[in-house]
Length: 308
Image (spheres, one colour):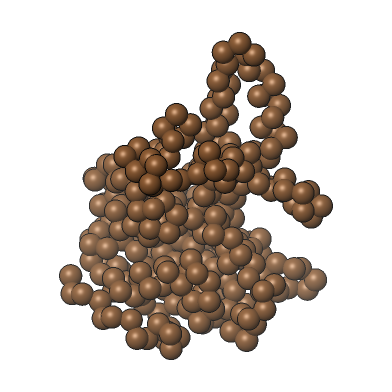
């Protein structure tokens, strides 16, 4: 028998190599992974054109025999139980942090199984817009920029705000958070550099800062996301949507890393154009956890948040 773990991240040729070892007589193959999270890292455009950026797991899950069929298999989790087992127990996140990804990517089927003492540990943090709800969406209409010939973007206003939140969390008088409990995710190398410099200046070098790819498979008590892009004049250009904004899988990985607190910084006037971030903005506003800059017109008509 052959078991391939994290099969969603392996390219098909990588996956085929161990499959050659399966017994011809009675061998079975198990591909374990999440096709809704990041797939193989492929840099060649030619390789992507020929589908090498799609894992064998994801490709098979799009074939009729493996596809979701609620009519035929409604009593078995909507998949053929002889071929597909869907693991839905989540042992990481607070229910409020799990609700949106469960709705967007997992047919509302994720079950909260995390340790309540861990995931509720920051519900009383004084900086939460809504006590008892461990999410902050902080709107920042900062300026995006590049240095010299570097193609990588950074946003100084967001970087400073990230540093402030890190200080509040790790240096608070009643803080239960250490620097190693915090992870900062941002899609651009230059923003990673800027944030690391700011954190080094305040002696918080133990905070991990990196791209989504570096965080897949990891978890942190607190995750802070800096989305960077902020040019409101260019969001109609498809090429503008880079980083998080072009990949729902990257979004899914980013927002499912935290256990007890998620803080997202970004420009709502740009992010509202993306389906995933638009849903996160609506979720944040209706739950009373949005703070920061003014909202775009399309978000100003949302229902008022219910009082806690």
